Amino acid sequence: MTSTTTLRYRGNNYDFNRYDDDFGSLYQRFDLALQSDELRLEVRLDAFLPTTIFEDTRCPPGDEVLCYVTWDVRPERIALRWEHDEWLVEAGDSQLVLGRGIALAFRKVDLLAVDNALRGGHVRYDGTNVDARLHVGLANPQNQDPITLGIVAEPEDLIIAGEVELTIPGDVPLTIGLHGDRVWFMDDPLVAFEHRTVDVAGWSFEAPALLDGRLAVYGEANGLRRTYTFDGRDEQEFGRAVYASAQVQGDELTVLVEWADYENYLVAPSTTEAQASRIYSAAPTLEYEGPQLLRGVGNRRGGAVRIDYAFLPGPWSFSVNEALYGFGEHGRDPWDGTLVSHTWGSLARRQEFGDEYVWSTNVVLGYRHEQFLHDADASSAQIGVGSLDRRMVHGQVEVTVGSGEHSFDVSVDHRVETWFLGFDDYRDFQVGGASITYSWGVPLALTVALRWSDFRLDELMRREQPEYSYNVLGGAWYPSLEARWSFDPGTFLKAFVGQTPGGQICSGGVCRTVPAFEGFMLQFVGRL
Image (cartoon, rainbow, N blue to C red; front, side, top):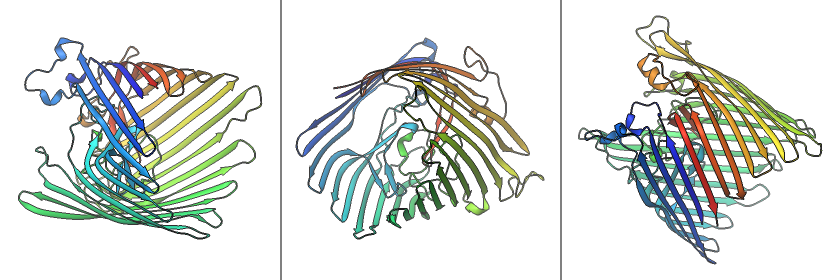
């Protein structure tokens, strides 16, 4: 059994809804597992109990849609698993990925607070040369969203999915896979489209050990058909997703090449849902996993190259990356939309033990440039093909120094961005932060952090810059303090107090908008 208890107070999160501010909450989670030789029963129980702190933030009649922070108690995950030789049969909640997740991905992504499972029946066969799986069930997202703290209603989307992989044995093993899925989306009274379905069929090819194990090749192609009823008419549209990668591994040099060609390819209605209830796929984006706003994820075409070199047997290494692709929005072809060029590199030194003092460092610098491949604004005589759409310069430095049981980690990151807002109007903003972490062996870690940001999504939409008092430092400064004490592996107590800025985080082609936070949190995780 693992028990997770979280006490939290949230002040103002600086959105347009005053009914999700100034409240305390208790979140309790129990992960239970009972194991025999071939049977395993897993149960996860969740409880979320918020309480309003101030009278004037209670929800009045007529504003119920704004009062999404409410109590909830439920069995979040239930699964009974039988495993015998090559067979595994499950009833209940299971997470699954078809191929590289392009066709379907029900998984947990901690960075995005995404935790989706498929509740139904699951059969897997893992043989010597043949692997097969079949899944049928209803989508079951984690109902308490850890980012917004709201309760997500079950979407009741019905999914059937299957995959077969054949491995051809030999000196150079090859794996060929076929997969497919269908999703029947629940009708939403707030959406004009009805009877929405998506069909995906594809194949994959993988050769992980060519040239005596130095070359790994992977390719995947998927076709998509979307059907729906709009204004009494039955409509359908098609899309595709092609992805390929090749990696050459040497003693000191590693080269990775990727290619992606997506056209009108979104398995769910959107991969930028405010809530994570309908993130059903994770198409590789060729992007830097860091601070940027991804657009046109399902409609892009281009490639990326990554070169890593290690100065062996020394501790130093460097990496150079280049991504060049086009993406289209509002139905545009990717090469008639926006051209993106993103170059970044890193220099790293790993720790070498044996001396009295050990240290490591990692430095990352990058530049991203987006320009129009079409006329951006018919009312503007100065904005057209080749004009700047967005630009970002970013960097990060992290240094760790240790001696015995004591160590310090210092990290600083900063980025400067320029966005085109339309009508010859550009906006510059800066986002960054710094932190110092002291660690005493494994048990104790103390972190003092300061984030800064002059970017506000609501200000951007309104084209104005009102002054807000965000915290005791004022302006765009967000200080915080975090302490963690580990009793045993998997058992710890963590405390956080301070503020964090809002913004957007992206991972694996999926982006989520995170509200600003101010308050405190106390969390205890215990494992028996």
